[in-house]
Amino acid sequence: MAEDKSCTKWAPDLSMWRRPYAGKKETSLRGEKDILEMISMGEPLSSVLNRLCAAIDLQIGNVVSVILSADDREHDLLTITHNALQFGLHVFWSASIPLPNEDVLGSLEMYCCIPRTPTPSEIRLIERVSRLAAVAIQRRNEEEELKKFLRGRIDAWRKDALKLVYLN
Image (cartoon, rainbow, N blue to C red; front, side, top):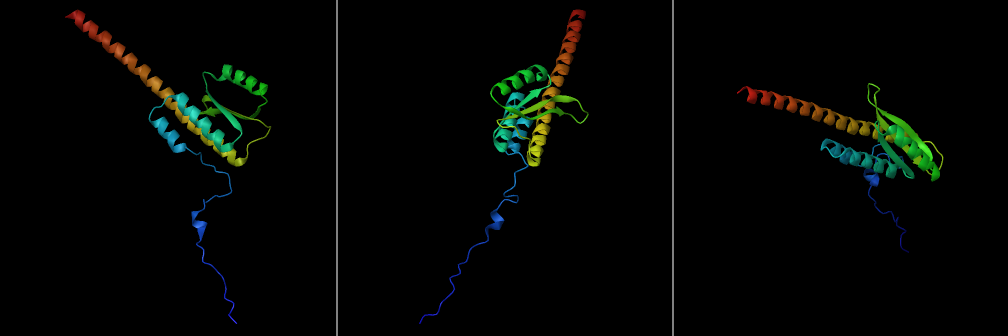
């Protein structure tokens, strides 16, 4: 009679192909590299903020986000909150986007179709989005200040040049 042989098959160890935090919510923002590139290339602020909102909305799921600059914050926030409530959305997160010196650059508003609070990993994502939004808004503000400064210098140079022409 034939001997019963073990039918053990060799299988490779696939653990090295698993993500280090498989099964856990990701705490890094997907698409962050592209968003940072948009900021560094000087893409319009609205495009960067829209991309940030889309990234976190997709990653958390079942939320709708809005980032408002400080200029638009008061008027638009009331309108957005009112419209969200009309469609049965609940506030999921609402916070200002501060600079380290406590100046407020804007706000991040998030709405969800069911009342709930963010998980700790979602809060880390929200904090990351807030920091990226702060970088984008601050860059835009600094660009505007630089343009204003340069316009003033060019105007002063033109006035000085005109004075020289009249003197000759």
